[in-house]
Amino acid sequence: MTHKANSHIHLKLHVLASGSKGNASIVECADTGEGFVIDCGICKRDFFARCEEVGFDTQRIRAFFVTHEHSDHTKGLGVVMRGLAKQGIRPLLLTHPSIVRASSKVDEVVSQKLCDYVELAPNRIYQLSNVYVHPFSTSHDAAASFGFRFMYGQDALGYITDTGIVLPEAHNALLGVRILALESNHDICMLNEGDYPYDLKRRVQSDRGHLSNEQAADELAALLHVGLEQVVAMHVSQNNNTYRLPAQMLQRKINEAGYTTQVCVAYQDRAVSVG
Ligand SMILES: [Zn+2]
Ligand SMILES: [Zn+2]
Image 1 (cartoon, rainbow, N blue to C red):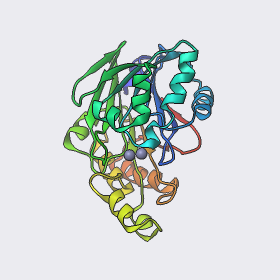
Image 2: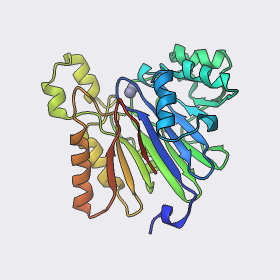
Image 3: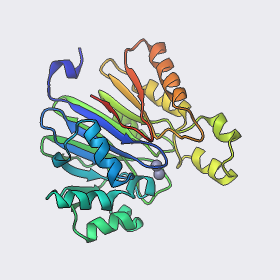
Image 4: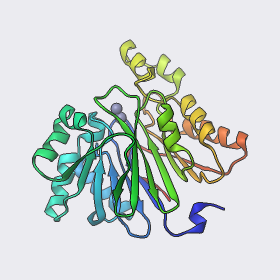
C-alpha cells in the first residue's frame, strides 16, 4: 500500500529540462494545482511551451527555488519572471543570499522586485500553503547549493542534483519519499575517455562536482523502500553518458532488492512528468 493509493493529496513532478544546457522542474500539488518551480535555466519560450505540454497552469506558480547560481539553473529566471509579471503573477523566490550575490540573473529579479525574496537556509522548514519544504545542502562548486524535500499531507518528494557526493544530511532528508529525482550525471568510463579537458574531468568527478551513474545507483539502493514509487534520473550528461545507462543501472538495483519502483530519465530537450 502506498501513500498515493491512500489519498488524493499528492505531489507531481514535471521536469521541463534537465542537463548541463539548462534545468527547470515544477513540483505540483495534484489537488490544488499550485506549483513550485525548482531552477529556471531555460528560455521563456521553452518554459511556457513545456508547462503547457505537461498540463501545468503557469497562473498557479507560487514560488521559485534556486538550487545554486550556475547559469544552467538561473539563466531564464529574469525572462520567465517578466513573462509572469505581465500576467500579474508575483511569485516568491527562495534562495540563499550568497546565491543572489553570486548570480547577476538572480540578483536582477530580486532588485527589480519581480518576486518576493525569502532567504533560504539549510535545514529549516518552509511552509507554502499546505506544502512544507525542507532544503538541505548539497556538495557542489557553488557559493551555496541545495536539494529539497517537499512534503504534502502524507506524501513526500525528494530532489537532488548538482552534488559530488550525497552528504549525510541530504541522505536523511531523502529517506522515505515516494518520488525521488536523483542526479545521475555521468558514466565514469565515458567521462575519462571523452574529450573534456583534464581539469574539467577532475572537477566533474570531485566531491563538489556531479554524481556518477554508480554513485546514483548506490544512493538509490540505500533509499529504496516499499513506498518509493518513482525515481527520475536527473542532469544526465549528453557528452559523458547516455539516456539508457542511468535507467539500466538504477533498474538493476531495484531488481536486486526486489522492489517495484519505476525508473524514468529526465531529458535536456523535452519534458517528463511523474506523479
Ligand atoms: Zn547544473
Ligand atoms: Zn552546477
